[in-house]
Length: 444
Image 1 (cartoon, one colour):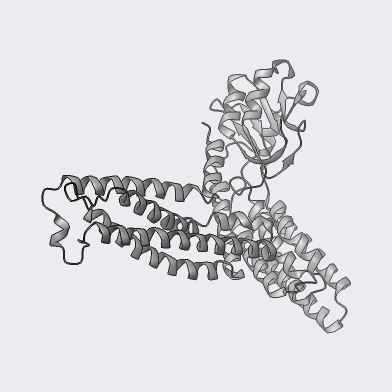
Image 2 (tube, one colour):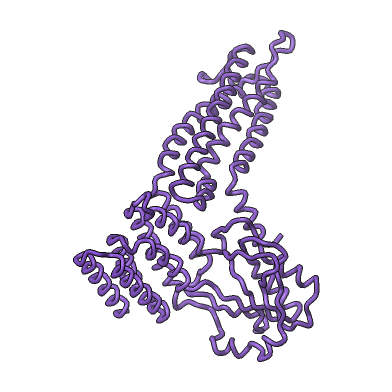
């Protein structure tokens, strides 16, 4: 199976509430068989020599395991109810796009898995207890471990109460999304400024494109609708090399495509066939929602959504919006120091095979600032923080187009403040931040 599809599968499993608990239940069943086998095989009961171990008869063993199983079902039901309430609060306060972040919380998955696996373990051990005198059997080791799991579950419950209360705090949510954004930048832009490995310049790559590319190329259309969650670059390179093709990718991860939309332009047209169409479509992983696996704009949009919701008249929380701006500015500083991959991809024989324009610093900055600027132009605090963010990002930029992008946004923010801020003294404060931002951009 290809890497992009494996990544999608892992993301789906990681975002589910059933995968980790199911693994823990399987481990609990295996543990019950192992401990019961040890209790059957041991010649002398090693548990009886341990003072703190459980060593009572069949009736007591049944009672304690029944109590553990019953309590674990109740606790698991309560924990699941609390989780659903937390998801509802997150959806209404932060936006539905943030739900998958809560679903990916490994802590919640382990908590639910602990309660359910303890319940299953108790049932598996309970069925082996025999109270008949001739064939009396009490798996003391297994019961002792069951008590240990119950005690561990109490500790997990205490952790869960604390974790549930802290996981819906806005500062923690914003920080978690910011961390996901930093990880996505490191994964998609691994090279730092000055360490790029591209051997081909812009002019050389443009010259490698056939002059009759537009005339003798043909579009390949998608056979399904959905968000592009990933593109298998290795598969596209292999297809292009084996068939001596030049492919121009028309869409990038994160974009929604409708069935019949153009996704790739293939050259030359004469080599196009049904098998090739199927292979190229197979390299594009589509889904019903966006993910951050190859889409760095997705966590940016999540932070923007939190900020825009905070700026809505019904909530009116500029402090949350400012916190999002701070996190976005840190991420843009991180991105500004990364080498943007070349859109021109060559095979091992130095032959141009794929043209795929990656997301640029300008694209990420537009996604980060545009909506917040539009919805927050009447807020003095938000407008000032946007300009302060630009001043903070400027020293990290090393490319002229990046500084031009920052200047463009500073101008738009200043004009928006001029239109939306009625108080003259407030606008003077905004103007002061604007001049500071322009100075920081010019000093780079």
